[in-house]
Amino acid sequence: MAHIDYYFTVLSPFAYLAGDRMEQVADKHGASIAYKPVDIMTLFSEMGGTPPAQRHDSRKEYRMQELRRLSKLNDMPMNFQPAHWPVDQKPASALIVAAGMAGADAGVLSRAVMKAVWAQERDISDAATLEVILSETGIDRAALEPHLENARGAFDTMTKEAITCGVFGAPFYCVGDERFWGQDRIAHLDAHLAGQV
Image (cartoon, rainbow, N blue to C red; front, side, top):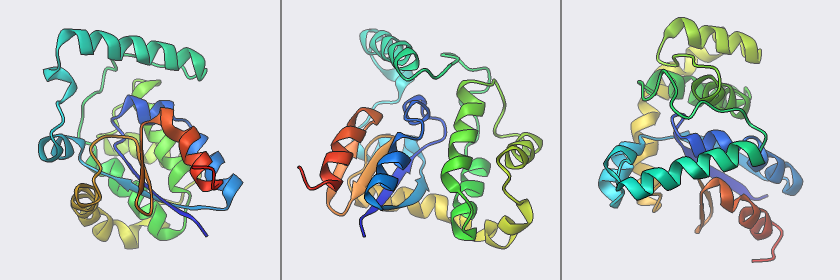
């Protein structure tokens, strides 16, 4: 069975705009998914990337055009300058990893967290907000508790793993040695899992 290692940050607008298309592709091919939140600023530092705020104005303008287009094309409402961004991503990331460890739906939780940032003007660094998001997704906080300590430590581990695997941005999808960068490469991921490329 194929397996997808999905490296992302809950602060990425492009990961948000991917919606559930990766999950649809995985279901189509019977592939499993490991959700691996990472520290994107560490990836930028280690892998030669430039944080958005430090990019040339032309790149910033293009990024905003892309976000507007993708929001419309994917029919996903979006606040392009959210009130709570950037914020501490570690608490939400730990819950996502713990959900995976507990056998809960880490994908549903990931998308809910990103929607909270990019469409709902909610502060995902706030513990009370995260509790509400868990409740909305139907994930039992008690089921995550035994895994939270390990999940918190996994954030740095997954970031190091991502660097070793050649991950330099988000969202990033890895199937063995094959790497796919960006929500606009999900069709290529689909083709790869189908044996076409």
